Image 1 (cartoon, rainbow, N blue to C red):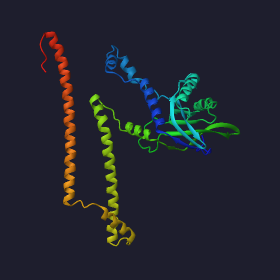
Image 2 (tube, one colour):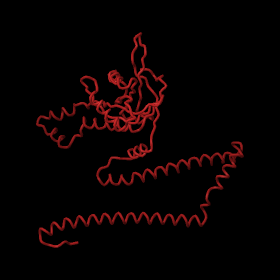
Image 3 (cartoon, rainbow, N blue to C red):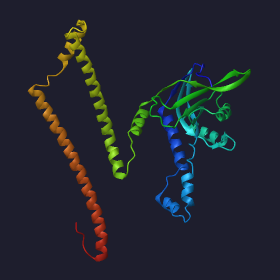
Image 4 (tube, rainbow, N blue to C red):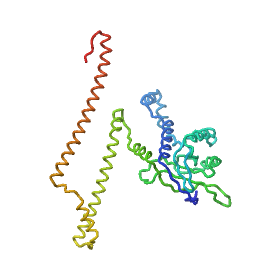
Amino acid sequence: MASSSSSGLTFKLHPLVMVNISDHYTRVKSQMNPPVTSTSCSNTNGNGNGEGGDSAAVKAPAPPPRVYGCVIGVQRGRTVEIFNSFELLYDSATDSLDRAFLLKKQELYKKVFPNFYVLGWYSTGSDAEESDMHIHKALMDINESPVYVLLNPAINHAQKDLPVTIYESEMHVIDGIPQLIFVNSSYTIETVEAERISVDHVAHLKPSDGGSAATQCKFLCPLAAHLTSIHSAIKMLNSRIRVLHHYLVAMQKGEIPYENSLLRQVSSLLRRLPAIESEKFQDDFLMEYSDTLLITYLAMFTNCSSTMNELVEKFNTAYDRHSRRGGRTAFI
């Protein structure tokens, strides 16, 4: 495998492709390794001779699955933009893809996205394998130069880059024999407004232990994201002010030479700041603070009233059914 591509193509990858591949891999892995229930554990441990427990303990974990699919998008000149992807059926016995399924999916996507074309395929794994070249060659009748998007599902906390690699295929002469090999290609992340909103929403989702936690996350996640962004902005502003303060102190002590242009900019910046120690500022601040508290209390009262209304309706429904059986009237 060569180190880098020499085709000169520019690749732009959309986050939706990575989300689709990750979702595909997660679903297949969950189906292959279902969670062990307490009933099955008790039945295994309850065998008379204890052989079931030993076999469960000795059983090795299944290797991580590999998923396959196609990536679609557009190519404008030397720029290849990958917008979306769809899953494919893979036959492990013949190391090939289901051709009829691929053509059917391509036809369906062509009706919805007439400008999108099959640009290549995707898979999961740590590195490209020799068997991948057979699949790559099989797609050359659809696209003469397909791209290969490889997602590494292994979690590496020390890694800073995205675990996604894009490969192209080039003909190289190795030991006097021309061979088609994979070469690594660089890419950039391209997003649109809808994708940024979706990815931000997915990034802030956390596993919940029940419906109430999920409901709270639905309302608190946007607020938490907003407050986090404000906190980050204030933190960045504080760090820059500290740097400027240390610079001015060093200039005052004579450790660094005076720079009049910088001093004029600092003086102009300070004059634009509001006088926060004035009485008018305190009055405006307290008024806005009180209005915010009133809105918060009003929202809490509205939520409590809605909850009480639902509870009363449920109680009336249950009590009305009971009164019909016993011949009594409703309490509320």
